[in-house]
Image (cartoon, rainbow, N blue to C red; front, top):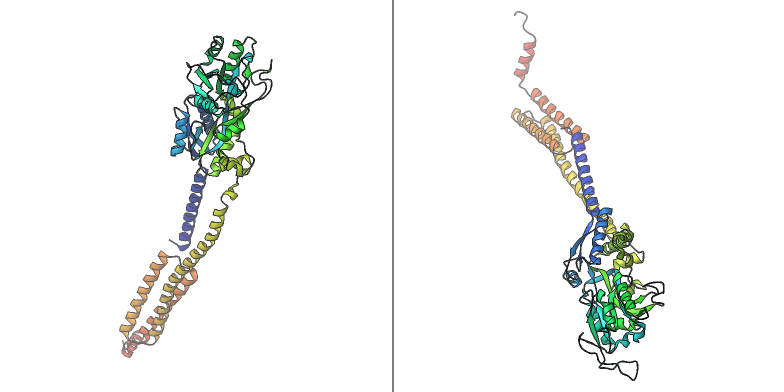
Length: 473
């Protein structure tokens, strides 16, 4: 095969390999990142929300995909994140807070909503001393949460059938031995329990705008002679959160439960729990930022299927430093999204670009040096053949020994064979090949001339006489 064809095929092969490598890198970098998200409990609104989010990501062909893994309880989903079996998890911090969990978003807050008839004399949470509180619990952790709040006010939860100790009659502060009987109820039983004086107030832990909270308030209104309900305040929310950092201070806005008449007529401070989407601390900032960004960008689509999506919000923080050192730390990637400080491609891989540029230059120089060294070795072999051919040319001119000339001719043939094999295996420039051809021709011509000029005189005379036959013949 001609050398120029060999060069062209090598160039196309290298170009195809380079394009294939670039395509492979592009495909690798553009493939979506799949994350496992643990959700509990099953068939709750949080599970439907995250599943809808995963479906929306797949339909939009985003760079993030979610593999939803349902669990029986939110405690189990937090444990999955803790043990590394999940990258993301729905967590309720007052139930279980994983040590490696950082918040991406608050899916929704749940407030302790306590409603009492207006004539019950219950205006604040501390007024529950010596009362019976009906609790509509949706989760096993609801009663421990209420018990923690009672303990803050030096109240003791009592069994449902026990008569609570009365409050201190000398003032508003309940006695140290004051207790509150917790009566478990279903929402449909609240009105009857109030009418039968089995409870003095009703409580539920739910999002203030949720139907379950409205049902409890409406049941209290239905059982009250004045058809009203007092939303009991817990004004010490900030102080309670300092002692119980897994809880949230929540404000129930005026008119949350109706506007005619407005219920409540003014905002009410209380406390509650939050359901959060958390990520493992080792999740990259870019991935965490993408998950958070898509979650809020797709909120309108999610709300059409799961109205609770409208309750999603960013965690409260004033600065990035405060966010990462808060009582419930926020993932730096989520902070990047909230602060609009997400990195561009060049910013993200800036260090790698500099390293490739720095080491790439040195690597290119090394490759060029190796190429020059190999080319020099190839030329050295050709130069050795050229030098030997020139030496044969000189030797042939200085000898008339037929045996020595025959040996030189055989050596020339061997050199020609060696050069041809070398030229087939390696690309050789035209100038070098031209020099080799001239040297071979010159050496062979010198050997041929010396053979002819060194023949015996009788043989040469015979050749001459053979050209001129005798006249008498």
